[in-house]
Amino acid sequence: MIDFVQPISDEFKKINFIKGARDGKYPYSHSLLIGDFLIDTGISSRLLRKLKRIYPINNVLLSHWHEDHTSGNRLLPNTKFFIHPKDKFLIENVNKFNEFYGISNSPVEEELEWLMEGLKLENTKIDNLLEDNQIIKVGNGFDIRIIHTPGHTAGHCAFLELNSKITFLADIDLTNFIFYAGIDSNLIDFEESLDKLSQYDIKTAVTGHRGIIEGEKAIKKELNDYKSIIYKRDERILSYFSETNPQRIIDLKNKNIIYKHYSQFKEYEIIAEMIMIQKHFDKFNTIGLIEQKGNGYILS
Ligand SMILES: [Zn+2]
Ligand SMILES: [Zn+2]
Image (cartoon, rainbow, N blue to C red; front, side, top):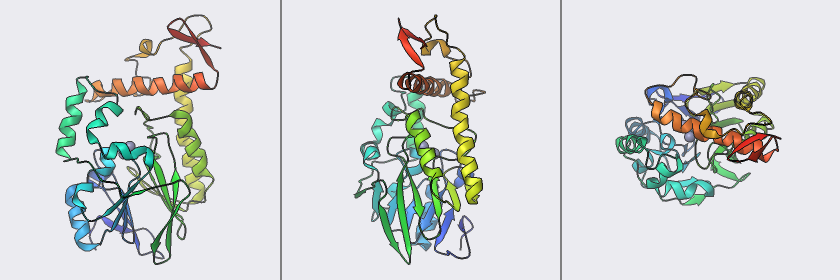
C-alpha cells in the first residue's frame, strides 16, 4: 500500500481514491482507480509512476480535456484511453488549448505554454469514445455508468460505479468556485448537468480537487449549493442591467464580479472572468431575460 492510495470503503477494496500531488490543487487533481481502470491522470508524474508500478492500469477514462486531469497520459503508453467525443479533438491537439481558454494572442498565452511544458503535456491517441448512459464492464462485479455532464467543457463526464454507488465527479468539484471560462463551456448545460447528477443516488462522491464527500443527502445538498453559486453570479451581473441603457460585457471588466480577489494570476483571471460573464449574457439572452440594443443588452 502506498500512502496516496486510499481504499474508500471496506466493502469495495478494489476501488481506491488516488490523492493528487499538492492535495489535488491545480495543476494537479485527484483520481479514482476501479480495478484496472484509472479515471484521470493528473495526480503528478511522480505519483503516477509509483502507482503504475504496483497497480496494473490497462484503461484510462478521461473526465475532460483539461491539462490538470490529463498530464499523466504520456506515462501510460500501453493503455487504452477513453474520452467523450466532444473533448476528443482537444486531447489529440494540445496546441489548441490556448484557443479554447480564450487566451490566444494575449500576454497570458506564454504562461500557459510554460505551464504545459512543465507538465510535459503531449497529444493523446484516443482508443474509445464515451457515450452518455453507456455501461463499461470493469470485471470483479464492477460496472461504470458514463454520465455526460457538459458545462465545464462540452464533453465533461462523471462516472458512477453501479455496485458501490461511488461516483467520480471530476471538475464538478463542489468547492466554492465554479469554472466555465472555456470557449466550449456552457452555463445552461452546466445547470442541467447538476440537476442530472442530483437524480442518481450517489453514496460517495469523489471530486477532482476537493476529494471525498460521503452520504447521499449531503451530496444532493452540495450539488444544490454549487448551483446556487451560479445563481448568485446571475444576480450580481443582472444588477448592472437596466431597461434603457445598453450593457456591454466590456463595461464589466476588472470589477471582481466572479473573482472576489484577483491573485498573482490576475491577468488570466480577468480574461476568464470576461468569458464567464459572457456565458451569463448568453444564458440571459437564451432564456429571454435580456435583448440586444445597439452594441449592448437591456432587460426585456
Ligand atoms: Zn477542468
Ligand atoms: Zn480540474
